[in-house]
Length: 264
Image (cartoon, rainbow, N blue to C red):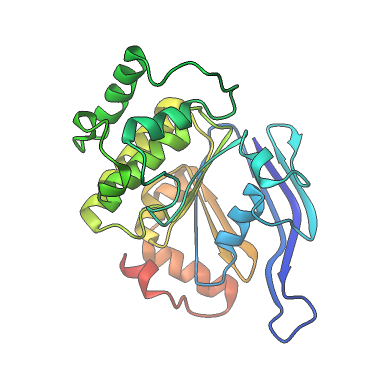
């Protein structure tokens, strides 16, 4: 479903601020893979995700999604393949529009627009049923402005919007990092359920080692723009935080320095 070959990305090349963010990354994802991505600050996690989404072009290498080479496609054209949820709950929704209006926008994404009026009754019932699965009481607030929702409610709504069209690839960029632990757990629970029922191929960056171990069927660790560890199946299920720290130190030659990732 995703094939990345030898991608490089350097910011501010030829200046004192030059930073090589991706250093020859290779990654293949099979249909239905759910990969969690862990790594310290500046490891290249978000740069990898932005490269896949087309937020900025890569310097070298190729990116293929479901057999289509998207390496040179602009971000808005890659949106036909990709669903994405950002770290900031304010992104991904229209704050001044109602919940049902945001869902309607997501449902119509990539389809031809017509002059037909508003949201039909059957569509509204579909949205109500979808929202009910979140367990956040949003099904009774269809006309509420999204800007009035809490961060967790808004992030859960964004997750629904990103997955309504069952994208070829779902990108989750630390999508629970800005939430309190209880709300984060609820959003992660909804994430697991949606990915499982729709068999979505998913790449999830997380700042939390425990979450990286607990979710998905595969885990990769990044360091200095490279993938230094790729674990799946039973090996992943047996992992502990201590194992990950040991592997990081062995492979990188330095201690893992992110307290946020360790303490979660």
